[in-house]
Figure 1 (cartoon, helix red, strand yellow):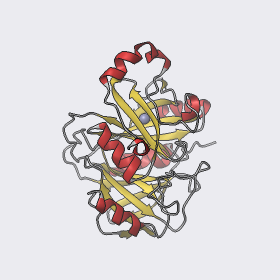
Figure 2 (figure 1 turned 30 degrees about the vertical axis):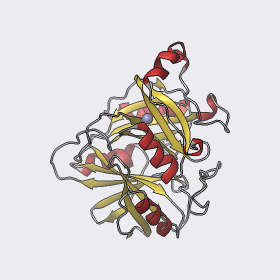
Figure 3 (figure 1 turned 120 degrees about the vertical axis):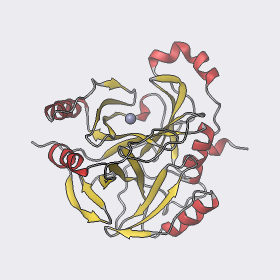
Length: 319
Ligand code: ZN
């Protein structure tokens, strides 16, 4: 049986100050903060996760906030834009809301039968809100925010737009190894889709010609993670990617999922992350994202770690 990734699991980016990041994603975009933890490779910095009501795979936008990071640039190997799926008819609401928040919404454009609204988060990370003919719902439902009507709320990832010097090798990895289908081209954007019934199933590629490679910094996507349903499927992925001649890391325990990483031929860091165990492993659904959670191997250092991190205020904790 040929393996196919269902779609994106999460997208991880680098931001500036953590509170500013939380104010944008949890308040302006109205996503739920589903986890506050630390960067497991650098516990002196937060790792913040925003998503739907439970952080369903395919909805989690995550950040490493580095207060003093320099601004990232564009170039090959960059994830130029991260797309979120919103219901049809909601873009006018979002354009107003984003304008009010200084997120520079551009004109709505139409491509591949979808309307798309491009904007920037406070660190210059490019987002696209995409309203297609049908909205796919996650089982746990969209995030709830008092100022974002449920019929407009962000549902899940739509996809990512990757900038690569030469799209061919990346395209071959997507179609011949990862199970994507080439859907066509619009305006220099090559579209690939994995499982059309799943959220976050789109990868678009754009050629940069040759040119400079990405300078990673604030406002840059660090990696794009795709889903494996469980550890067995991930093991198969590890063998499949290795057989395709691409070096893959060993399995890393990320507490909420297990991860393997590899660099696709265009330079973008890819991850394959398991759907299980999920964000409910250390908090009740009601409490998700309210308190700093540490993996068991950092618990003994909690006091020291907490002292180094900025104290964050969720939108509903503001007086
Ligand atoms: Zn990741």
